[in-house]
Length: 357
Image (cartoon, rainbow, N blue to C red; front, side, top):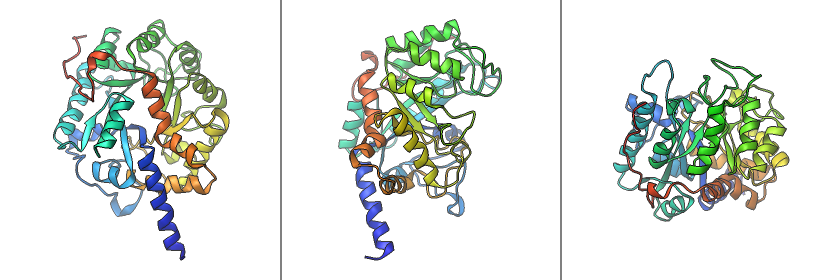
């Protein structure tokens, strides 16, 4: 067998694993591109085949890469947008319109069961996660509204201080402070509502406080690890163990800067470290595709996911551990944190607006 045919066989085997898992990615910012006319139903190849900071995810390339579930970030911009809850609602509605117009190719999903049903129908699952509690406008009751709109996780921080706490880096950073009183109450409310707590972007003290306070599995939707690359954006071994103790997962980001390397082997090193420190129930995919990240060579967009799976197999990952990493760990968390019953079954997501702030 030639090297080329061996590589082709390895990629086919990897795609079969992605399909079987089914593969789920915990974070992509593709809705940020919708106002610029980005069509998620059409294929968008990277210019000259090189890593590019945007245009990583669309339905044709999700199919090609064997990605069955994608969490899409609901991102708003404090200081640029006045009505942040309203802006978040519009992001959700924009994604829902694209799902409604996809002729069943893309389904908005809420539960692990929804994702499995979409997979059985050959549809891709779209799930929602808010990035930054500033989108709540300082009101706990807005979280319930968003939960009933289909939001499955809440990232407490992004790049600015908000009512819940302080960022790992950005405007208002303060490493001496942890969760605010509002932030502590928000953990409790998220647990009550079945909204997964996402610790991404939280400063270390707030991260550890939230991980200790939650009564449900927490996630870090997109991160690197300091044990491979010391970087303000990455989490250390104590943080890894704290997430593992909640029964949660951590998704490794596909950003050259945070990975500390420009090849997909850098992703393998971060995933290896997560598994070694937190166990094989912890690692997940957390690309941050379409979030102004420069992905590694060989992992330029979502269609290249089989190359990562093949690289992990070469690194000695057993199929059982790979299936967990690719999607079954994420599905376990979705199963463990059921959403509000009123949000509907089978991915039926209502679109009533949040009450005004």
